[in-house]
Each structure stands twice: as C-alpha cells, then as structure tokens.
Amino acid sequence: MTEALKILKTGGVIAHATETCYGLACDLTSPQAVEKLFAIKERPADQPVSALFSSVDEAKKYVKWNDEAEELARKHLPGPLTLILPLRNDAPDRIFPCPLSIVHYPFASLGIRISSHPLAQSLVSTFGKPISTTSANVHGKPNPYSAEEIRSQFRNAKVQPDLILDSGVLPPVPPSTVINLTEEKRGDVLRKGMIE
Image 1: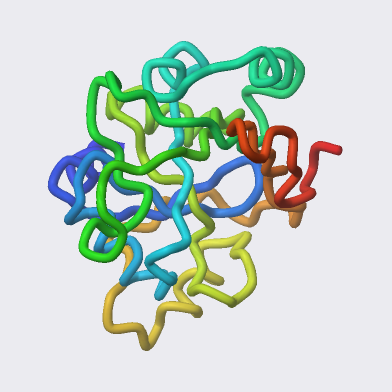
Image 2: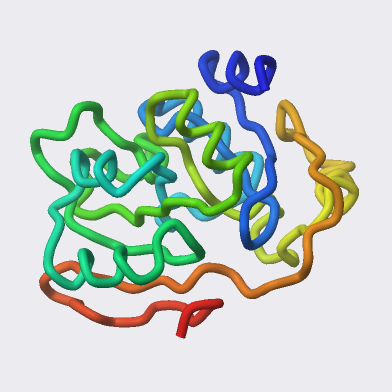
C-alpha cells in the first residue's frame, strides 16, 4: 500500500481490484497523471473516466447532488453504481476526467463511484483525494479479472501501469451500472451492470 500511495502522489498509475474487475487509479487532480492514464489505456481523449471517492459526503464536495442521487446512493452505495452529476464550481480541487490537452477545462459533469471493495476503499481513503476508476484494460479489450490478464494485455505496450496490486483472481461479474443524473439526461441508464 505504501508503494501504491507513493506512485499515486508522484503522478503514476496503479492497477488494483474493485468489486467488479481490476481498475486503474491515478490522481484525478493531476492533468499529467490523467494524460498517462489515457496513454496506458489507449483510450479516446473525449471519453471521460469516473472518479472514485471514499464516501458520499466526499463526492458531494465535487458534484451537485440531487434527490435521485440521494435515493440511489442510499440503496446501492458503496457498490457497483456510477452516477453522473454536474460538477460544482466550488469543488476543493480541479478534477480532470479527460486529458486537458484535448478537452479543455472546465468539465460540466463527473461520474462518481464509491467502491465496496476494501482495497479500493482503503486506497482512496488513505490517498485523500479523488482517484480515477476505470477498467485496467487496453481500450476495446476485455475487462481483466486477474493481475495476469493485465500483464498479458500490456506485455508489448509502450506505456504500462507503474504497479499492479495482485488480489488474486476476481469472479467475473458485470461492470458498474451507469446512470446519468445531469439535468438534460436525468435518469438515462448509459450502461446496465450489476444493479438493475
């Protein structure tokens, strides 16, 4: 854990287990770390990643909460649910869900997660700032459920995760359910996952 936190603090990217699959974490308040994350995943720059928070109260400091978010959070968080909400103008830190070189700040909305996995929860709580939460795969390839699958996907990649925290083989489960709660798309289910 100490090494993982050091890597996050210095702009690196780590792979770790979540309640769905293995994910990639970086400091979402660092544009350089986000650039590296997108390079590792070979992810299109206009496809934002979500933010992992230690609690709903922490997430509320960054996004504009509403009644639907409160109800869904009460039922399903912590857990495999991503809520997309408008970003607050008075958030404690700037968040960069996309590379700044391509999509310019300020961003309008943010996907938020609160993980039920103890390692993911410990990472974000100890780090003290929002970290990225996105599957630890090369864009377009299958979600990884083991450290070996991650190593296999990135074996020949030019840019690789700085550290893989091996939690063994995870059970293959669907990704998080993604619900858009911004004003213009309130209630749209963008991805059906474990939560119906």
